[in-house]
Length: 127
Image (cartoon, rainbow, N blue to C red; front, top):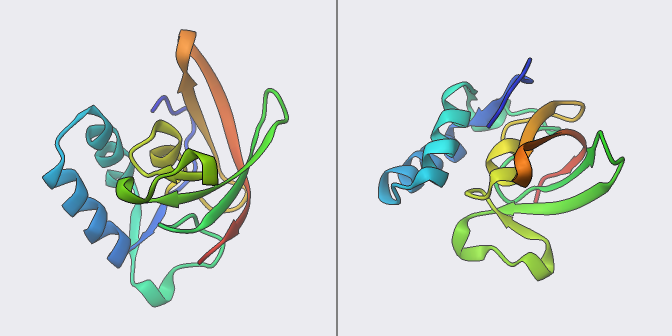
């Protein structure tokens, strides 16, 4: 991920452990990117996780700051991904970009043709 002034990330101990297991069992550029993202996160006990943080299986609404386009997705593990149902894998570029962000948090997300989009989380609904 290309990050300029990245927002703070917070990840629960349970999600962190499951994500580390996923990374270790599936070495790839996608898991390398995820590992880079979660390595800068603050790890907290499950019961200390704020309710406005993007976690695994949460529903996330975000806005593209350049186009003002709003999207709502559910962040899931790869085996549960289904683009038709807006279930996006944690190993996708946008999935690894969103994990751990809080409402109001932003991240720069590179897309094809060398363009960088700024995404801003506007709502989180934990499942």
